[in-house]
Length: 69
Image 1 (cartoon, rainbow, N blue to C red):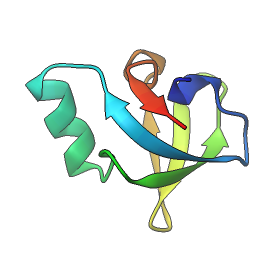
Image 2 (tube, rainbow, N blue to C red):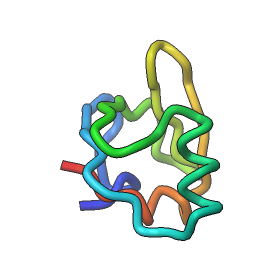
Image 3 (spheres, rainbow, N blue to C red):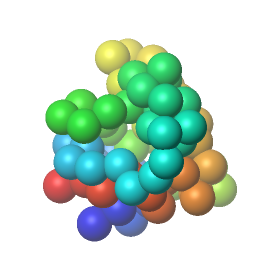
């Protein structure tokens, strides 16, 4: 399952990021990397996730490259 498919209010653990070095670095700098647990705040338009009490919005294209469990 990818991050953009997770429902609002649900928690998910990032298991893989399917993208190049640039994408992985952008997500890492925002606190999104393998093993991190996130909570979905909004899934309409950009995907907003909560990480360590910070809300981060990422585009749907990026969210579709993040595999979660």
